[in-house]
Image (cartoon, rainbow, N blue to C red; front, side, top):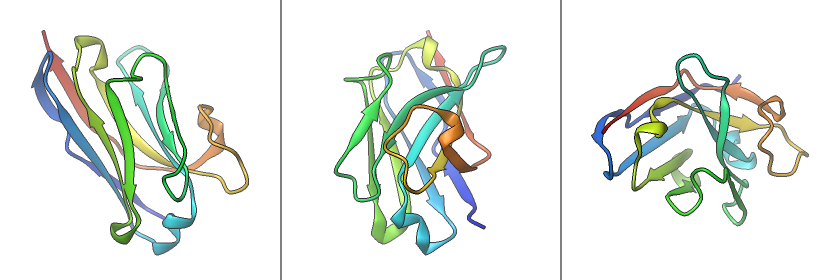
Length: 125
């Protein structure tokens, strides 16, 4: 069983930047795609970005494309989410997840099998 640990959240002003990290406990994580999702209070969990196992392919939600960048460093078992030009609407609990094997990059949360506990990002306007 793989454990995912997110970090890097906190309070940031609108227009600012923040980088989130997600470290996996198992080396096998590098064989899987991964994604970032977020959930704001009173709202459904929503897709943010996804990346293939080798980093060659990425997928973004329309609301973050051009502002956020997902990447990974397989030598560190880590996936990152660089967030720029943050807006108050980006305030949420951000979680990373491991994509199930054999499924193309996906925005569907049910295509992901292991999840971290999340890290809170709060953007002040």
